[in-house]
Image (tube, rainbow, N blue to C red; front, side):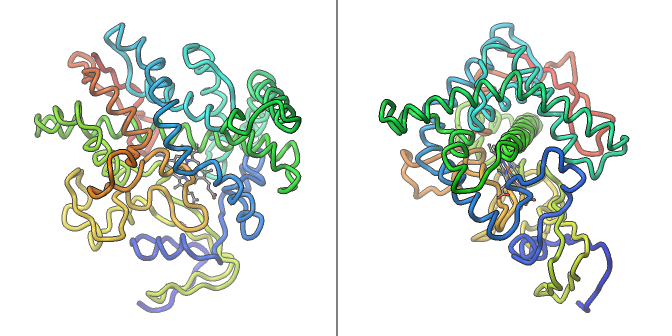
Length: 403
Ligand code: HEM
């Protein structure tokens, strides 16, 4: 391929997107309009500042912590969220998904709220939705200043009703730990506690810690909820053609994990990532990314690249074989320096038949989907799902299920 230059460029093949994600000369872009909620967050940092923050936050996203999470927290939270729906024998897949995802993400971020208080979860979710609208301001067709002032309002409400009490509690616990009255083990294992304990080392102001928590809530909640809805929808659709596989999904968690990875490949939560080269970068195929150009990494197309995922790469097939070294979920968790910290938490460990069962992690989303299916969850034959007419992406506005 010959050399090309332009102010905007879109990368669409697997190899181009992977190389761009991995390049240290490409800086995260697209969040300056949404600075009100995104400025100085991990996703928006670059270079040394990013490396140092990431190293500290990574301590929380370790396998031992995931294992504690999967075995101690997850089941309880899913039960509390799902049980009222199972009891009433009906519900809506997207409501179940976001309530569950919101509760789980709040726990990881370090925001205290009671999963059995559905109204509180709804309030938090509405706030977090507003944060996301702020983060994606670049693409908004609304008046940007109007959105910014709504985001500020949501941040103030969040601070008063959720953040301040959670922070005060953690400050108290850290103090007790410093005085030797509380063991390390008994400190909360969450992002807020981690940042508060390392604020001096990282030079974090109160505002930065606050925005980082706002960012974590949106990074975790929507993508988890989205992945859950798609995983269940794809399994139910596949089950219409292969009823035995639907039965299998109701009892076999590792099969659900495999299905989740395939759904995630076809439905990345963020269909594109944006980057800006800090200097001219030439990709291996000769594509020139000139300094300052807006580079769009098209995950949707890279994940469907038939050179990598084979014939029928745009079709759902949970039995798909992928080449060695290629993740089943494609690039949906990103790659390189900003690769998702929640990837193993949500997607589990790569499927490996050699791994002993005691070391297996299936991931939050597969466990949520399996809980719903094993409780007998299925589509309500009298009320069909509906797509959100305001979204170009395949989002469901209504998805009635019965148990
Ligand atoms: C299925 C669920 C998820 C998907 C598809 C997803 C996807 C992604 C992607 C594509 C990126 C990279 C964006 C870029 O390079 O521009 C990313 C980064 C990130 N994700 Fe996730 N994510 C998911 C779940 C989570 C969860 C549960 C958490 C935390 C609780 C989380 C926290 C983060 C953070 C903190 C980053 C920024 C990392 C950095 O900049 O170094 N994500 N995620």
